[in-house]
Structures are given as C-alpha cells and as structure tokens.
Amino acid sequence: MNTLPDRSPHPDLPLGCVLHGDCIEMLATLPEKSVDLIFADPPYNLQLQNDLWRPNMTKVDAVDDDWDRFDSLAAYDAFTRAWLAACRRVLKDTGTLWVIGSYHNIFRVGTALMDLGYWILNDVVWIKTNPMPNFRGTRFTNAHETLIWAQKKRGEKYTFNYHSMKALNGGKQMRSDWEIPLCTGAERLRINGEKAHSTQKPEALLYRVILSSSNPGDVVLDPFFGTGTTGAVARKLHRHWIGIEKNEAYVRLAEERIAAIQPEPYSVEAFEFPDPRRLPRVPFRQIVEMGLLQPGQRLYYQNRDDMAALILATGRIRLGEHTGSIHQVARVLQEGPANGWRLWYYDDPESGERREIDVLREQVRRQMR
Image 1: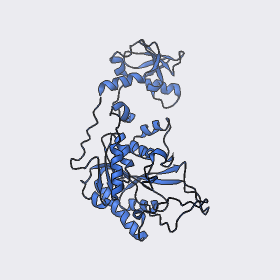
Image 2: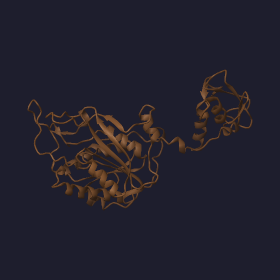
Image 3: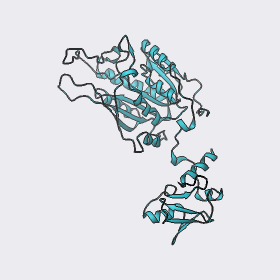
C-alpha cells in the first residue's frame, strides 16, 4: 500500500466539506493562495422567456431555476467578475481554473477572465453525443458547451498531465473537442422521479478536467457545487475537495452522494503518471555499469537481426562504421531525430525474449525512487 502524497494543504482549509452559502462570501473565508484547481459551473443566465414544449405536447424540463435568473446583463457581469476575482485570490500562483458555459454566457465570462488577469490556456468544446433537440425548429440544435481553461498567472508553471490524457485517448494526443454524453441513467440524481438538478454534469467530463490538471493530494474547489459531481470524481481520484453551494437541498444530496463513494486504495501505479520529461535521467552507460547489459553483448536496431550493434565497455555502441551513443547511432540509421531507448532491443537471458532496452531504464528508475 502506498501513502497519498503529502502536498501539505493549508491547515485552515475545510477539506472534504460542502460549505453552505453564497460562493463569493464563502470564498472570502478561505486562505489566500491555497487551492490547486477550481472547476466552476456558474449560472448560465439562459434568459428563458417561455415554456418549451415537445411536438407531442409534453413540457420540456428546462432550466428555469431562480438561481439562473438575473435582472440584467450588467447584473450578471458584476456577479461574474466578483466570483472570478474571489476564485483568483484563493488559487495558488501555479493554479488553474476551468469554467463551463453555453453561448448565453461563456463569451462574457471569457472577457471577465482576461480583464481580471487570468491567462487562457485552452477552450474545450464538450460535444454532447445525445443533445436535446431544438423542438421549435427555429435554430440549430445546441449540441455543445464550452469550457475555458485558464491559469492564474501567465508564465507560471501549472499542472498539465499531458501523457495521462494521451494514454486516456488511446495513445493519441487529446484534442480540445470532447465527445461525452449528457448525464443520464443511473448517474442522474432524481427525487420522486424528477431531476434533482437541472444541469448536473456527467462524471466523465469532470474526470478529464481533474485528471488532466491536478495530481493526487491536490486541493480541488468547486464554487457552484450543485449535487457534487466535482467532489465525487475528486474523491475517486484521491484529490482533496471543497464545495460551495447556496441551495440547502443540493448540499444534502451532494454530501450523501460523496459519502457513499468508497474509492479504491491509493497506489502510485494506479494514480500517478509522471511526465517522462521530468523523470530522472538514466544514461545508457549506467545500464552497463550496473551489469544489466554486458560489454560485448549485442543490441538489435528495431529488433532486426541484420542490424546488430556491439556494446562497448565505455557505454557506447558500434555498428559497422558508426560508433556513438545509442541515440547517435540510431540517428544515423534513421537519418533523423531518434530516441535510442525505443529503437534498440536486447536478448533477455532470463525470459529468453528480445526486449526493448527502455525496460532496463525503467528498472533503474524504480530503484532510484
């Protein structure tokens, strides 16, 4: 069993709690520069004027809650700037913020972000694979929402688990268009058969947000907590979480939902995916010095028997007229940039198999931890 990394969260943070109250007031009670990641799903100010009806004359369960109503665009802008400024105060200088919205509000939110000094890193389009149709047939179907990802201070280091997202995307670089269905079925919380919250987000969406831009032991804050999707996913991924929610009924639902989650025990292997570029450097000569490979042994370029290089006692290799490091010789053979760790193979005497030499580098790194 591994111990969750001690990232020394601020001792005054109410970790694992849902704070009941206005988000701006509650944010003011939190320590400055204490939070690693914020996900915000604020009111969209949809400005709905009339009820929506399906062709079969059943009423659409649209967003008509009081918390989504504002007297004017100016009032909404003032509210947006106030909560964004409060979030910026509690974010660490290395922290980032995600905010989601629709065409009704996201452009106004983006302007406020930039005016307050945030630096936008990406906008991500959540493409809904099962969107609600436009029943009146007067516009295109609204099949997406937009997320803005911004860092608190331009130029500061921030967390982006690029290789984790690439692995999650089947080995391909993850793009900024995410195809994820709406929250439906057993995941959708209901009370007496009715939706408990009109805009509950799918856990799959929060999974990408939290996995991509935080690490185990980090503090994740959601100032519009709703029914607790952010906290539920954070708990499963072994992040600390804090929620702020004004609606007392949502607070109770969120607390019950998260209390029922029993995450799998933390382990480095399951939850930590360090950036290979930041791993300890292991020179090939160290592999030879440690006796994991022997001088005189052969390495096979791209696992080819007709391209066998000789390992020299100096930790260099020789193939025909070419002598150099595993990278230099591979570069000549490829006629371009080359990572020798992924191109040379050796015969493993224990298994009898031919294996990539990178497994030996990983073996050394494990011993260095």
